[in-house]
Length: 248
Image 1 (cartoon, rainbow, N blue to C red):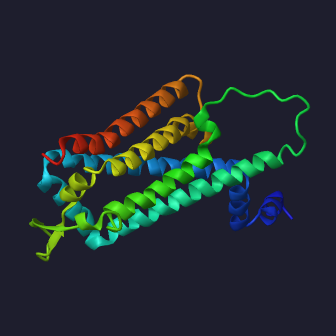
Image 2: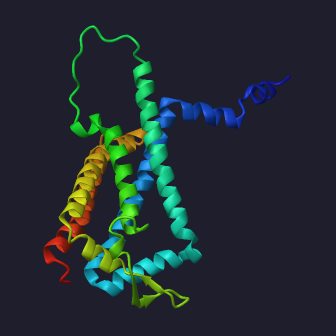
Image 3: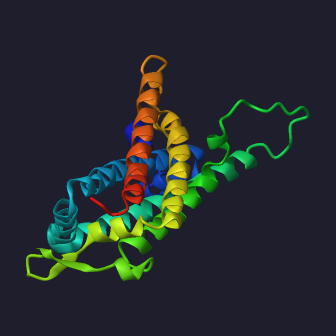
């Protein structure tokens, strides 16, 4: 038997290798980083689309029609399912990683010395769960029409390809954000999101094994700057619409 035959015969099945990787702490970090990056991309695209509210009713309503008709409506559902899946996997492996870290030190240290960490890094799991809850609230408000259903109306100005009236996204946002309590919920949600992104962007590249002392600080600063811009853009919509009182 040649040496190559021994190597081939002792190789583990691919499924076993993948399963072991997923169960490991390294695998948990990589999956968290990949799903986190996908969520980053979605948030940026979502923000750019929603900022069309400042261009008037036709722009944001046409954008809503574009999303619902893209790939005959399939693309929007794929995006929604993918978003939920990314959130679930992101939070699940965050919890799993925390348990693996605790299991690695079953005996407490004789002397405890608190590491210098940010408040965001200590509450990543909690903030992730809060963001997931906010996501469902946002869907209930903007997509399902469960929140303030009286504003979930249609418009005859913009129509679908089959001539059916489109959802009046503009009216829903303008009238909805005239309520202070709804504005507060969105502001709190964005503060939690900013906290999560601020810490996540610092650990994303390191989790993927792309850490480098030269460019990693720049990448971290860039990511945190983008997180700040996302926060500003997301809070601008409810705040501006509230103080303008629908006069746009």
